[in-house]
Length: 346
Image (cartoon, rainbow, N blue to C red):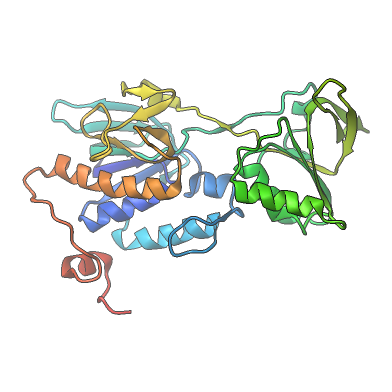
């Protein structure tokens, strides 16, 4: 059994930044994730996705952000335990936690920080009869390599940020793109929607969008080749949309997995925390990122980073209540420089 100060559950961007915030306070950790590499959704689903709301970066790729966070955390020498899911958490009489993974790894941890994003996220599927037979072929729920779509005709389903982001990202790579959404209102950022519509209105546009429901799939030679889309209204019209590749972005369905059985207070599949230190209903277990719920919570990476800073001080208070807490600035503090392994100069 490995004894550690903290086990972080989830190696997405917020979990990676939690390593850094704990490290600044001199606290070591192990970080566990069910997928075989760090990065969470940014690496697994959206590696090429551009992100525009990280302070100091007008734009940064999702995988680039992950790489930078891993580099930033490296001075604190975290132990990564990847490809393993935490299956058992039990509080001991000492107040510490016994933690066990699906691969049999065991930890004696002083505290836990859950940074599980949406948990074991599942893409909401296209439920049109016959569509499931083509999943993983030319029907996909994420983009692993955008070069796959170069010069091809692509249809994209959805009206949220992921759908619009990939419409804009693949524009100019795919030969043409057709966006299909089931209602007039889009959930994506207004700037993305406006840009999409401007591109679609150009005379030489290779981008179009349609509002309607998917009536059925079209197959040729056992290959998914198109969709029949029916518009809404008193006089619905049907059109057939042909493509080489189909991308579906209907969102992610939260699945907490074993976390749902840890006895924590939940709110619609999210973990309730207090805002002072992001502690859950169980003392010693903290939670940050998209998985948490509190009044005013916003599901942004930026907010998750703030929560990681607050949780770090909460963890320190839980583990070492005798320590008088004070904020030390990384620019000027010799202690911070020593922990960061820097000399304080640029």
